[in-house]
Picture 1 (spheres, each protein chain N blue to C red):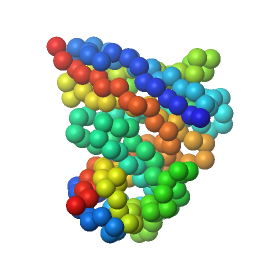
Picture 2: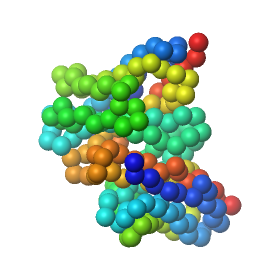
Picture 3: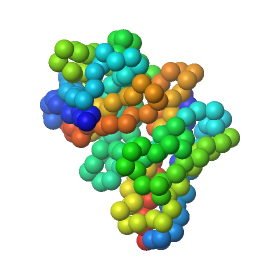
Length: 108
Length: 120
């Protein structure tokens, strides 16, 4: 099945930029979605279709996707951004949905 | 406003069948291309997609769990039901239902989740 690879953790200082990657074979040909999950809470969609932001999501969150890597970028990181972030795609070949293993973002 | 809420047992015994209900509001499962999905998350682990049911009753299942899963809908009650047979302690997880919009392949609204523990 289609595999999404994420780094287990990313650390970033407040005010700096965090980059969270999601690797997959030719992932640039797929639509990638990103979710933020804080402890004890349900996931929240923060970027859909590679780079769109749902209503209410700050502009600090952006996404890109090309080749074998999709990236979620969080600029001007705040303490409240500390969470797990998951990427997700639709595996068109097998017609099912796949999540990455998640990346824990720690704000130093 | 779209909302979803999961309900069902919090504790099941090994080998039993789990039945979970997702009750939703703010959208209709009669709308073209809309769907409801189930995703689970074992404690401290990643999200895992389980199943999806579309407005036209088309269904999709996780390949690894296909033989144990069944998803159905009752549009008159705005509910989606997931059953998981032959439960095992490794199936202990928070189970979420989520709205799948007609315009994308993401899950844009999620329920709060329900923790199901499998133990004798």
